[in-house]
Length: 114
Image (cartoon, rainbow, N blue to C red; front, side, top):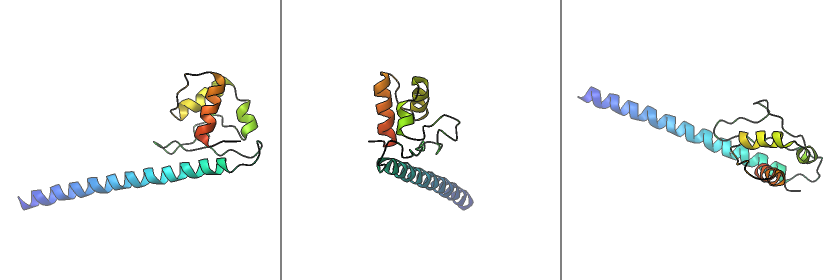
């Protein structure tokens, strides 16, 4: 019986360690995402670089997923609706609005505010 209790405790500890690791990873990704948004907010001109923001559930960026990402705000403003939809979908954002609203939604998400 004591061996069973020890085994159960070890399993519980392993589960707790996994949960803590998952929470730490999520927290690190949230910090990274907010850092990228903050850098995008600090831009001073339309031609200043926009950083891709990571996706929280897997830490991926559009670039890593081979989705076109605009290099600056001017390029973002000139994206096709299909490109904007791809980025919104990648980030899990709704696409059920007009073109201007889609671009505004994407810019807000990325922290682009010029």
